[in-house]
Image (cartoon, rainbow, N blue to C red; front, side):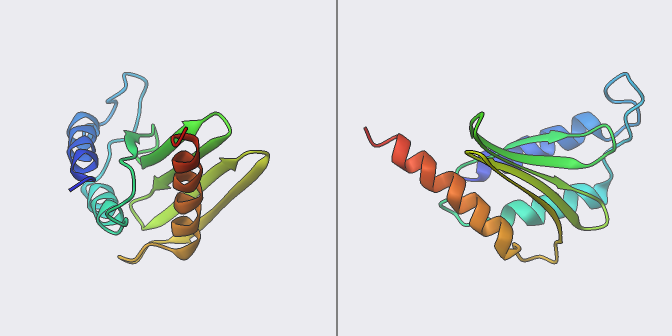
Length: 126
């Protein structure tokens, strides 16, 4: 499964950031609820999706990011209450917002991921 690496990175991030002050600067711990939602989020991705990078934020949210270039990136922050805060840069277009995650990928995020992936496919076929 292509996304297996993402699940492994998620678990590693959770284990490293589950205690308060994990960054040495007073960061909040990543809660188990946040880990569970991030796991469900990754499971909801289409199998053909490239593996995103996973990280944690000082506020305890988990970040899932697709980075293709400085002008082609998508970052999704997953909160413990199921909110997905996202920001994308697609060329000169900036798109951001918040969606509620309920075990299914919100269409707007599916579309943004597809746009990131589409551009990646075009640039790698030279």
